[in-house]
Image (cartoon, rainbow, N blue to C red; front, side, top):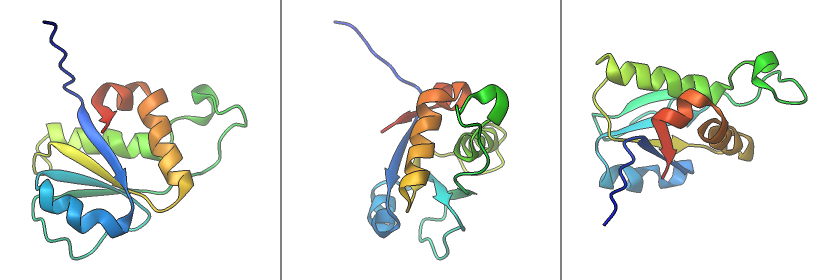
Length: 123
């Protein structure tokens, strides 16, 4: 029997209307939020980090010209806060996205950005 262990942090993308139910089942969750931070979240151990999708990018979307996307940078800051004990420990991340652009940017970070790809996995 072969073992397969993926120690990367799972990241699930949902719409804002599903957040309450998602937090009920997973208390040690960090939130990656498109736009402004969410208010009145019942789970006290939740860490929030926001990002604004888009920005100026090279038409060929290469990292050498455009740098990292906003989602990749936010995931980097989130991981750094976790390992430096600047927030409560979290076992998973929920991406709260409203636009197709934000969803695509997070998925692109998970697939293309070397640091995000090494630290997080789609759930």
